[in-house]
Amino acid sequence: MTQTYVWDRFIRIFHWSLVAAISLALVTGFLMGADALVWHLVGGLAATALVVVRVIWGFVGGTHARFAGFLPGPHTVLTHLRDGARHLGHNPLGALMVLALLTVVVALAISGVFALGGLFKTGPLVFESFAAGRTAKDLHESLAWGLVVLIGLHLGGVAFESWRSRENLAAAMVSGRKDTRPGDLAARARAARPVVALSVAGLLLLSGAGLWSGLQSRPISGAPVAIWEGTTQTECSACHMAYHPSLMPAASWRALMTDLRDHFGEDASLPPEMAAQITDWLTAHAAETADTLPAHRLGRVEPTAPYTLTRTPFWISTHADIPDAVFARREISSPANCAACHADAETGWFSPFSIAIPKETTR
Image (cartoon, rainbow, N blue to C red; front, side, top):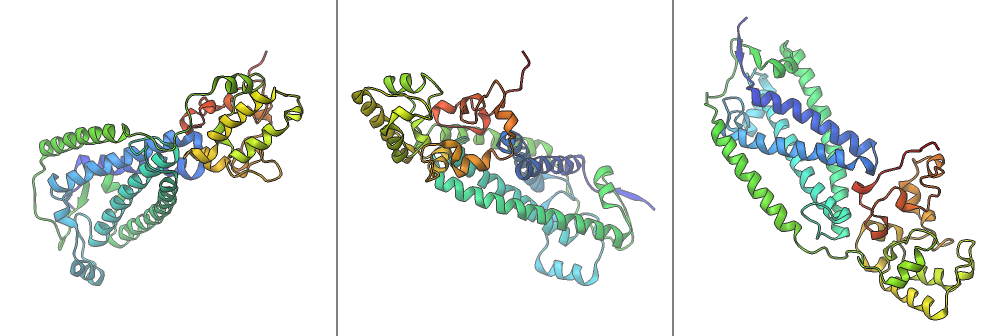
């Protein structure tokens, strides 16, 4: 039986690269914590870039790569379901799956950028609100589950079609070749135009970089206060890290400053005027004034411990997988020592890209 060249080199590289990129994004997104977010972004950005180039190739690629050659109408789908004719390229159901997968990956990229900007104030949409970021995150997670379902259907469809047509479709996506059989349906021959594809991709890259830079230059609304009042920083950092005022609501700061004679078991008494000055500054820049993830989440305090960060539901849930032995390391010494693992702790940002749990050292 003779074979014909169906899947060009770009389509094959794209297919398996997309498999790797999506796998990385799904594993880091579903199974790993915030410290793996950078790898989640690598997978997501790679998948998005691949899809963009695939869309370009869908208009200027070769015979079986072009959308015009395989995207079906309703009649074509119904005909395929009825007679099951063999297509050299994507059959109508496979074509719909390709379209669905590409669409969901693009939707994941858009929702991910909104979530990144709103929740972590990172990326081109740093000006987005926390509320918008939270909504985008919920949508992003739903789309991710939808992608998992599509992948399952895709694998099932490939397995079924391979069995029904007595050919290894996965192997064909490696070699690029498929058997030719009587009655095969093939798309109209078209020549690939790689120079056009590269030109469009380059233009999109430059346009995207300019748009990214322009959006990122917009001011961040609800940013935590950046400059500490001198007395407050000096006094608060005298015995421990200076906890940013946006990490607790104003009521918690007032409760904390009411009686400093019993400050977590220590006497931290201050002259009344100084205590009042510090209290005013802390409450003026408390959690209610910031639109960051820590401000919103840590601002929901435990009523029985209104000024203990490690007793808040958010702190407990995000640190649940860290063994007590890690907090006992000399380099950390206490769960309350946020700065040991969060390089930007005293700024109030707590970026997931600034997390590094120190290794235990022997002395």
